[in-house]
Image (tube, rainbow, N blue to C red; front, side, top):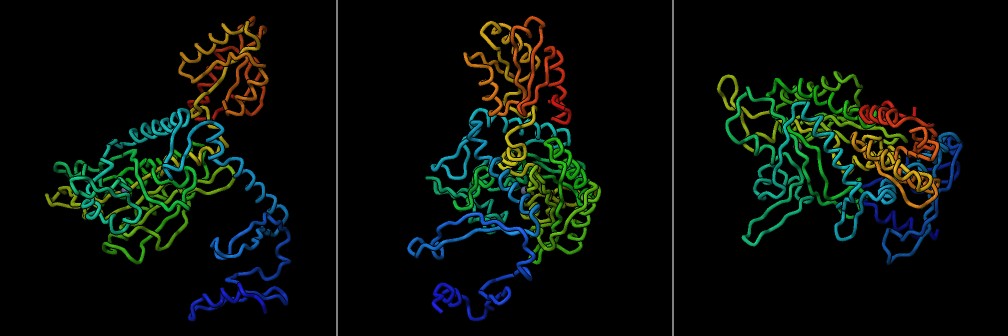
Length: 492
Ligand SMILES: [Zn+2]
């Protein structure tokens, strides 16, 4: 029938495989399916784009037209979907990162980030926040080498299971090293120094560990999918009796921390034993029950991912929902009954016997680079005051107010705020527009009237005029907003 492309597809399907045919009314065609029972179900549709595409993705083949469309059961669903797409594009962290001069990436370092001053400042603030939260939760920060002998990775099983994603290097003395793709084996080495007693447990080691993983270049995407990233990684060395309690504590910590970043809608997914696994079923029973108890204690319903656990143990995954309804898996908590033993870690139990500790692997941000991107997109670049690189810009209307403006900036800086003066010879409207585009939370203006009354006039980056107030009032309310991490905003 002259359908040479379809004939080619049919020819390429192996003999034993079924060929799918789907129909709509009296029209039938090749399709893997499934189809809706009738096009009447799709009340709302829109053609999205038309693009040229080479047959089978090969530029030596003919160019065909590919037509993209989307169909929904109602106009409202279609509208919501289109709105989400539009919002996602506006919020793209690569675009915001450029506009706010936060970071860049370039071809010589695929999947690695060049952090600019403002971006790095925010990045370091994320670390400082996590460092403080972890310390209060009983974690101790450690730091392990980024390059270690390949034999260690052989022993841990990473070389075998993960070798394709590892960067390796051979040195002039002919030793083979791996750049770490994970922090676990390093933490086990620290645990193994000296004799550990059951009385020392739990031991909670945390590291802002820079890891490298080779990803195919086609998979890379801004800060979301990179080759070099920083994990807020921790490993808890515990006795089997401590699995439940420690898992509950970690789960609560994770949920608390997400709230500080404005993520209230968090889902937990529970992945249990896979077909290919190590360890006795009795131990798996215990580990799974402990993680379920942790999810329940956190007061959150969890979904099941049957058989999706790691080969060494079950895991919880924490999924954030952002401002435009997208889900991001960030945190994980895994119970590991395998790796410590493999790497020769042990402690002396109450009966003076050597035992391998249980290890909990835990990450909260997951990858800091990726979390940074999620934050930028969630807030559309309008980072909360406590994270914003500049919290307020102060400007005069004419040169006459320069002295007053400098005094206001000085006063706020002395109280620990990140504030800048804008004394350029430009119209105040122009300056306000520019700082609004830079997403500076508060724009402070002083004209002759404000100077005479010893006040300032304040507006927000959302365009809200907050009126005139004394410097003390502004500082006090800014402090409340900063310290409540945006839960009480000056603007409200
Ligand atoms: Zn780990």
